[in-house]
Length: 193
Ligand code: AMP
Image 1 (spheres, rainbow, N blue to C red):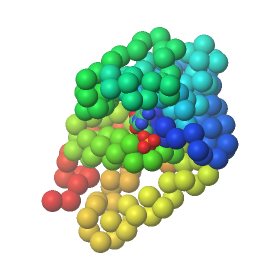
Image 2: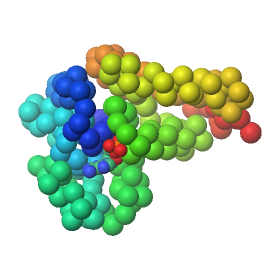
Image 3: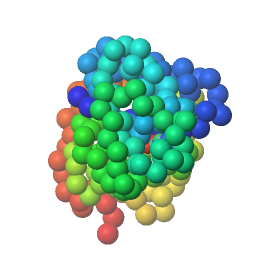
Image 4: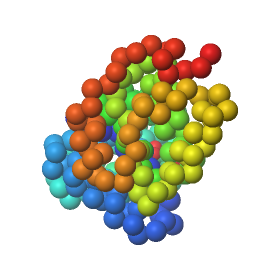
């Protein structure tokens, strides 16, 4: 399947994140999955793309044209398919469309936004594609604690947390994406209000 991977553009991160990103890319290829991603060459985006490239896998990069002026040196252009868009919105839309599953690796606000958008769409039953958080070194523990606080305070339904898996193990993560049937359900099952 096509797996859309979101993750840090920043290279100023600990080596464990880079190593685990590359390992994820390599394992995706072993299992015959293609990568859909934002086209960044650095940080976790670059690490996953390198892992996929090393293994001889397929890479689909979706990049807004303005990145080519503003951040050209940080783009991973060795993609099998390189899709240019006019806006970030169009780019996200194409990434979502082309993906059969989503992986959120450690990242900054760009990645948070991508995770929350894909989860919001899942909660609203706009798609039934599996979502997994690759929780390298417990990076997302505090975000998950915040989501639990939102449940305790009535802002979120507890069932919302059943819409994605959290693991720091690449094998468990890919098993989940490949094997877990996605419950249909209705908006009321997952959303307050
Ligand atoms: P951040 O987590 O803030 O580093 O943003 C990374 C996420 O936003 C990635 O998953 C990309 O889809 C997108 N993004 C942000 N900056 C870049 C960049 N320089 N190159 C490619 N994608 C980027």
